[in-house]
Image 1 (tube, helix red, strand yellow):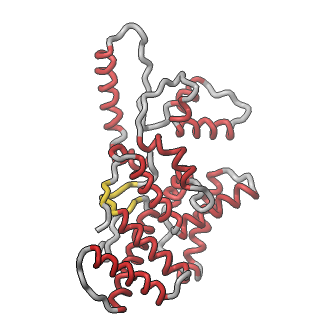
Image 2 (cartoon, rainbow, N blue to C red; image 1 turned 120 degrees about the vertical axis):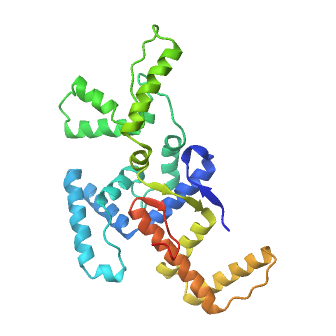
Image 3 (cartoon, rainbow, N blue to C red; image 1 turned 180 degrees about the horizontal axis):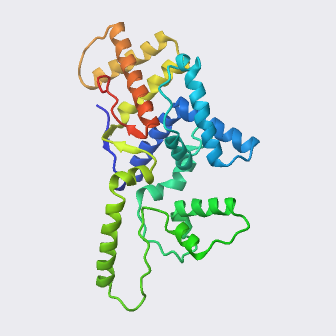
Length: 294
């Protein structure tokens, strides 16, 4: 069996989390719909000055036209995913086809792993509050010649649902008194934005269940081998047969597999990868992916 990892970003060392997110990144690269979304976004950035809202509407039209065309049959496409999921991936991951995972990870890893208490007067605060940074950037783009009001700035600063924003008197309260008041505010905020909401807002994907890293990597490997055609069918079978024999030797077993049995195993792995890709398009990873899962 492969290595089993339960997804909870606060409980894992960085190397383990990096493997998980890298695997997610690689699966997302195989999504036909997200690849098309990235292409439209890139073309727009080069050729036009469309506002994002108009561009996202155009993406929906493009998705619909593709699904009604012969491309649907050629690529065996599922129904187009919710473009809001695609948009959230774009804002969070960017273009996984042109960008480098290592660079993305270096920017995001601390935000994924650690929770900070942030002094908002610190000039580096925006480096941690990336949602705040994005909000102010959008405001300046949409209103380049307008100075925001106090109310608008307050709204921009407090937009992130991961934090509660308070002003703490420097001298007049004890730490215990401060803690009690913050605990009450935090409790109220958690009721307003429960954990299920957090999973869709903070990271644009809901991690479901447990991951077997080695298994999921193998599913993806054989999906790519079968779809990209870099190896012949005989070469793929030969490769898998060799791997199964090495596994038997490691486990002190002697089980000989027929060619058609190897083919069934490969087909099952490809089907699992297809289900995982579909799950990602619907905002879940890895989700249910066994052949008998509905």
